[in-house]
Picture 1 (cartoon, helix red, strand yellow):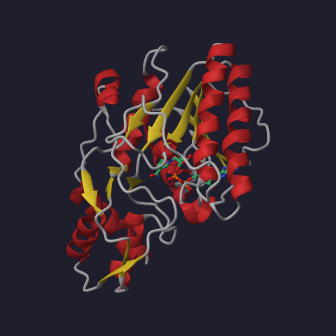
Picture 2: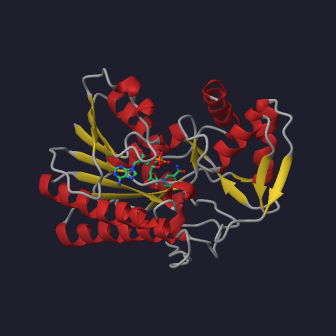
Length: 309
Ligand SMILES: NC(=O)c1ccc[n+]([C@@H]2O[C@H](COP(=O)([O-])OP(=O)(O)OC[C@H]3O[C@@H](n4cnc5c(N)ncnc54)[C@H](O)[C@@H]3O)[C@@H](O)[C@H]2O)c1
């Protein structure tokens, strides 16, 4: 199949392109390189099944494809808050443009949505039925509300135009090719530990997160894309095993062999205290569950960062 991956030069996108090519698909990677890099895809450039195109998804795109993975959007707070108006445009106009393309060429389309649509949740763990608790005017709203609006558009195209849609709500994912300085907690801890700098914990370190290794996530996205027509989602994809920030920091120090100290700083605004996916739906309808334990995934991620620093 001819498959378009928007945001294909990013962290998740580049792993997805790689896996699709291994599966024998013809892959078109579209990216404006805002947070993605050519280094992430340079190893694919000589492959005749791979093609990269510089394009901003806030503008329409005219290509012939069978399937679309819509991943284009900066994902870390540092980057999505850099130009919040552009972030909302990327989510909303990007979704409109890609849905328009899918409608024209009758392609199946998958949206990379996010656990951030749940905001700072009152229910725990979060099931897909939970509508979320998002501050619509806060500094994170450009991302959270942009992604919520993109979901709305996907379901309106589904109801109004009978489009084949899939919506994945992705929870914290980590692995090789994350950016070293984008403020995401796993890369932050690893980079600080490897550089021998203080490891910064926001708050008292008792807030929890769950972390999904990139290979597991990509498998989930592929399974969702291949699922029967009626399986539209939204479906949570993430690892339900929870860790406190303190546990993550201590594990990172142990695996890197670092002597860095833990230091504590105030929590940023609207930072959720707890985030854990309920993946019952993904288990039952996709037969999917994460398989890579945190310690193993961290080892692979540290092995990636060590030489690049
Ligand atoms: N990594 C996670 O933990 C996580 C969690 C939830 C959701 N997601 C979603 O998954 C997708 C990929 O995330 P990621 O972690 O790989 O982030 P990333 O920043 O590495 O990748 C995003 C890619 O989109 C590109 N991009 C941004 N704006 C664009 C535009 N206007 N036009 C074309 N390309 C554009 C960037 O250059 C980058 O290559 C995002 O949509 C993100 O919201 C990621």
